[in-house]
Length: 604
Image (cartoon, rainbow, N blue to C red):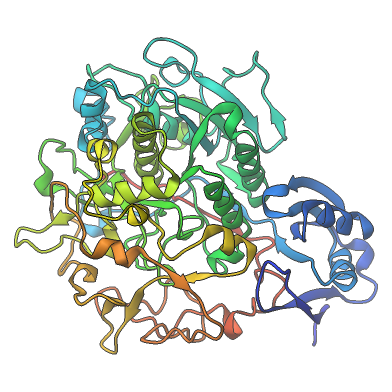
């Protein structure tokens, strides 16, 4: 191979937790360049975190993060040390330590013919519209406010606003704070410090649980829930896989100590492997297995299909897309899917998102000095209020709803919570009675807090079926015994259908969908066939993705996806060379790649 680098490829068996074999290809420096190489930040996975740490120190590397939740460490290693490590051990896997962001530059609405509202809406409707849209206000009037349930917010920190740090009684409800970047746990004296210099974390927390009552109603969905602040993103909204995974590790280790039942993950990166191979996804799956309801954003890369990010592509978790009321909260007939909301299916054929929630022009607390407020001053009122749109905010709505559900029915497991949310969700219908959006755009529909929290099985469905994720086993998945595929298939005409169902009407993309269309969100609607479209089945060796899942050369997310023409998957979607992690060594060319997640989007 010409050029300053050559490649050495070594066939190594994967860990017992992963089936198959991994081709590891490492870029070797040309002779004489070794001394000038700097260390890369990487994730090293082995049978245990201790084994991973020993492998790092054995080659002279430096461990920076202990990540027991995925049997790994983060470390600084030069390319030469990385080569030495894989040569010494057949059970070590190395991943680049990806960068992630909570917000950034996003799409423009002007060319789509949509009027952009640049006014901060501090009217009563602006303050309390989303709790009413999801019927959380009915639970508030019944005394259900999330009390006794802790939500862990993995984000950029929390501002010291009274409505965020105190509940409706004025009692402090910040029960824990962990800095995953510096690996520091706050003492009792520092729990209320203002740590959010970016603003995203405060805004997400406000949507989920603000106790503000300016409008006479609660502005947050779960105003009396407790909050656990897990800071994994800096003042620029940037973080790393290692920091986020360390935050999830801390959450699982301290869930009993702080009563953590819900984890809000309002961020997402571009998938670079099957869901089970991604280290961040592995940590998320471990949290779900530990009994924590994980709520993740679908992403702001819509309306393109197959745009669900990590960790929203994990089949177990509750992935949330966004809808908008178009500034008319009392008129549901003009509501629609937000233009930016990412759509499914996932690479493995799972329907995502599971739900949608309000995510347009969401009002919440944010300091005027924060990065987001400085970058977008037109959406800040000069005091403490900021208007922001995104699936981040929609995710926070659903996290608040889950807290309300768990206050009312604390015995519910994560799978039971997901089942109830999907069963009573309200899908959008067009005026002709057809579905306003397909399943791959809206999932089961708009979240309904009151119906989900008060749902009581009528006895017609066997107890064994009153849970989501049927056909999947997260523990077997984590152990590498089984991995799973969903039920979305594509016929020769490019049309989607659900394997095993007679009708594929629910999958059709809304005909003639434009950003100005409106759809009525129906009352509680029970999907037929017991959510068969949400089930999974084990992936067998050599699964050929029959019926249209053709992974051609290219792996281009933007190219080769015809939205209007049935979403043909041909000509563009493979992790090159049959998923051998092309030009290998984890995710090719990604050590210095910044992954922008949950892009800043204009208000709608």
